[in-house]
Amino acid sequence: MVFSGGIAKGAYELGFCRAMNEIVTFDQVSAIAASSIGSINAYAYATHQIEKLSEVWKTTDYKSMHEFYQCLVKRPVIFDAIDAFAKIPIGAGLPLIITCIQVPMIHVKYIDITPLNDCDRIKMLKAAISIPSMMTPIEVGGKKFVDGAILDNTPVRALKDKELDVIFVLRFDHSVEDYSMISKDTQIIEVVFQDEHFMKNSFALDKKSSRKMIDAGHAYGMEFLEKALRFGTKDKEYLKYIASSCNRGAKCSIIPKNGDDIIRRINKLSKLFPT
Image (tube, rainbow, N blue to C red):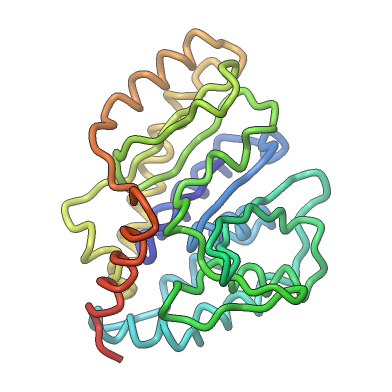
């Protein structure tokens, strides 16, 4: 599984994980990669705490985008949530690879947090949601890290060395991605959560919106997984058909082309909400 970053829209991923728990036995999941808020959702899924994290989402209530932004920068709510549930270790043998940017070098790092001790694991999860230029980097082992989503928001690449039948890629757009580094024996199946209010719902961390997105993610996940896994994961031709059907919507690229583009995007986001 690959969990993309999407700020408040990450609530859709929690609903999908509920569906996974109802349809797929957990021991069938061999590896997880995640970026930004997807890292928090992926950790909750890997440690069987989806319902606990869902309650955090459902009880967090910001009345405006500006209020959400202010609390996001100050980080108390989400950091408190990480402190509360991230002490439960991930089961041995299940890699959970998160995306971070090591500063000041500004290059993406894929870090498996499964073998880390409690303290470093918690710090890395906090680093995974520390938005560059808005939040202070988190220091782990003498190195400083921030959210890696701006360089790789959908870290399929982190699983390139794994032998997998199928990779479910949870995402919020149909941008073009390069999956050429993944073995041709592995089917990439994109699960795209789309709505008409991309920017609004990205910052809609209020109880009503969170509940709606979680429920929608669950409903879509149930429908999607029942179709995709109708014949299990061994029927390669059926999986190939499902992948082709689900991925055909890819039509545009929103990935930054170079370092200057990345910096412009960070600065633009910073100016949206004055501190």
